[in-house]
Amino acid sequence: MNNRNLKIGDRVRLNEDITNMYMPFPKGHIFTIFGSTLRGWDLVDDNGNKLVECLFIHDKLELFDIKEERKTKLKKIQKL
Image (cartoon, rainbow, N blue to C red):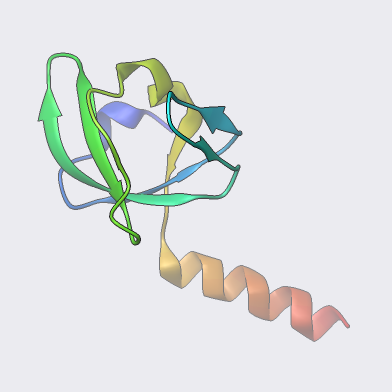
């Protein structure tokens, strides 16, 4: 996916583990983009943890679509 298409308000998911100065975030952690600067997006998770100017992790983010996530989980359940 071309991450340039992401915008403020989008939900994004990490596709690999990252660690910043104060805490690690595991693969699959979900953030909301709440700002954008030349130095990257500003992200916040549902617990209020913020990562700002995240140019260094743009390649580690993917768009999170709750509808697609539900479809995938239902398919896995149906296979059981």
